[in-house]
Image (cartoon, rainbow, N blue to C red; front, side, top):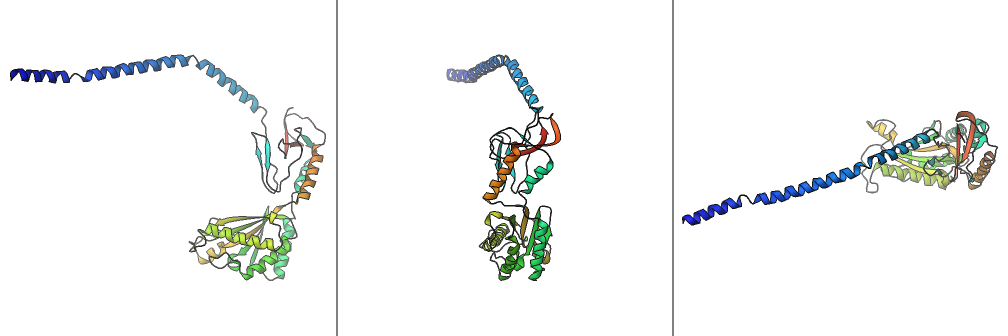
Amino acid sequence: MRRRRLHHQLEKREDTHRWLISYADYMTLMFAFFVVLYAMAVVNKGQYPVFLEKLNQAVKHLSAQSQHPVTQDILQFPERKLIDQNNSQAIAGQGSVQSAQSHNEPSVLNNESEVEQVTQTHQGKALDDIYRQLQAVIQANGQKKSIKLDRQKNWLTISLDNQLLFASGSATLLDPAQQVLTTISQVLTKNQNYIRVRGYTDDQKLDSELYRSNWELSVIRATNVLHRLVQLGVAPQRLAVEGFGQYSPLVANTTAENRRENRRVVIAISRFAWQPPEKQKSTLQQSTKLKNKPQESHAQGDSKTILTVPLPGGGVRYTTRQDKQ
């Protein structure tokens, strides 16, 4: 009995020290791991001077380029023209003019009046003239209370009472709306100015299975007005739809009267005009004549001499900055 108890005690003592074997293996592996990390750090240390030298060269290269910056100006036409500075390509929307030239040499416009002349080729009929014509036809048809005109710098807006155009929660044009749009179209068909049809609503929750939101309702209403204008003879190339829903109110939606005022459709006439393909071709020829004028060299900086620079992908850049050749 005593021998069995002694043997049990010896086995118990041996079991308490077995963890040292695993611990020693773990420490050996960790030691080897950190030795490898140290060796890698010593090898990479020799590459630091090379990295610093490359970095300094890159900084010097960027500093040299900053002394001769490349500028891309935007000449505003009926649609915006986007300049891709990485590829030096001009991306023009419908209604803008691209040059057919493939040369990179800039030509000179002698004075600002020539630039103004180029811009004028994209101008539509004067908004003041359209304003007077609309006033005349609206007054002649006794619709002055139903239509509001607002003359702005780049737009002439015609605000139509939504109660006159549509029933509540509906996008179907009412009979009075047909008469009002017929009156307005008498003036719109006599010019080529761009037109934006904008829809607005109040902030009341829409209870309808046809439209998911006021936003969608405003777009559908504006679209129906647009289609009616096309039926009345307005060129579809001039038209576009904008839906603002409840997010652009004229007044706070605090009373029933204010909400009624915010429910509206606005026909906005731009000062720029859509050009038929034949007119665009004529404008391209004018740009070509301007480009073929003699070149001039000037010191770097801004001056009164205006350069027209044809871009590689088509389009023209106008600038007064004289870069060193």
